[in-house]
Amino acid sequence: GEKVEQHESTLSVREGDSAVINCTYTDTASSYFPWYKQEAGKSLHFVIDIRSNVDRKQSQRLIVLLDKKAKRFSLHITATQPEDSAIYFCAASRSNNRIFFGDGTQLVVKP
Amino acid sequence: DMKVTQMPRYLIKRMGENVLLECGQDMSHETMYWYRQDPGLGLQLIYISYDVDSNSEGDIPKGYRVSRKKREHFSLILDSAKTNQTSVYFCASSKDWGAYEQYFGPGTRLTVL
Image (cartoon, rainbow over all chains, first blue to last red; front, side, top):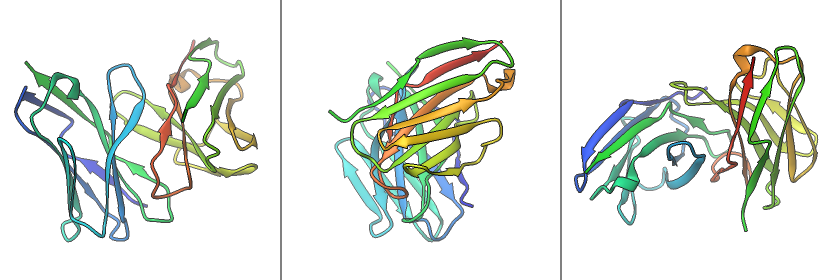
């Protein structure tokens, strides 16, 4: 099956700087790549996704990049704020299969 | 109001006791999931339900079973709980399986003594 790896287990940035979280996947047939955020002590919620028909997607301060050749995708958070501090999970799936999650990256935004 | 609910939110049981975790959703989603989350291990998929009475094992089904008799309800059952089943359990739902956003419940923190 698919295996999704998140390269950074923790990431610390200064408020206002950009944060980048990188993920790789193994299944060349994967075509859907969502990101989820989990704040301390809370549940997960969806933040942004990208499908394989595009290589870039932006929603406000969040940018997702997809490199299908390298089987790599990344989440860029610009102008970070304290409320961005959380665990971020990347995931991948085929269009007709379950989602496989990475192990999460703890992002800390320092004031 | 799109919502996934879980009951109970906190539960303490003794080893060998039976455990019932319940999940509900109000979005008429076909697909529902049970995950467990342990520190450093991310999310592990226990079971997927594609619809009523249509369930499939995930990555770690041993020691668990599920029941889905109504589309809006999905239960996770631990027969004779073990201490290594102490974890946080999340239920989620999605419109369909695969490439669709999952909506997560608030989680149930289960402690097995």
